[in-house]
Length: 227
Image (cartoon, rainbow, N blue to C red; front, side, top):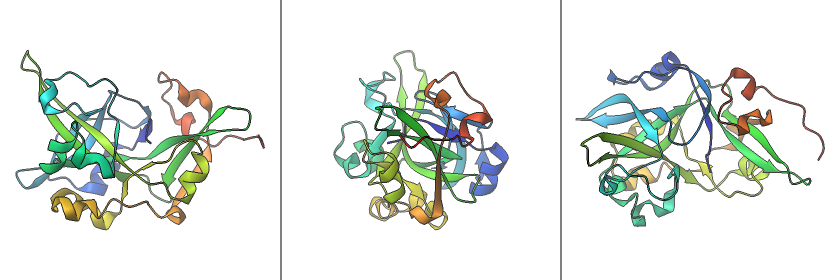
């Protein structure tokens, strides 16, 4: 799954995705959590635009009211059948969330959840596949939100997240356009487990467990005992 992630520098994100219109405004962050606003690339009238979306999808029919649990992630296989995601998926409301890396937790033999930071090697920014929706409240406030798509784990993620069984769908650069502009069938073919040889992961401070912590120290490697 994907519970927390780090945001890249805005200029780096714009250089990576080259949006035709950049409406977003954000700073580099190191501990993004549920319900916070995150940058995303999507299509509008055939052109790419960079916007801010609430992380945790609220479907259009919910009239701005979140469903029972934060819908941060959705399994790739479940989108077409999910009451929450079906309309967004069939309407090709796909987007890309730029991140610097994401966090996973490993349950140790001492029943301690050790956080790890996971990133694409030699990249300051990469894209996660996501879907978005627009919901209007009874007061006519518009909430645009998104959820990250998850796929089966690769060997690196499976070794770390020994109590979890999914990973966020990392898009290859060559698949950005297909994900945004392709048919649902074409887009779904881009949802693959990322090559673990192209990734890095290392243990980090448990300070990331608190949503109040948000500094560069969270993604620095820490010593990890054999336990």
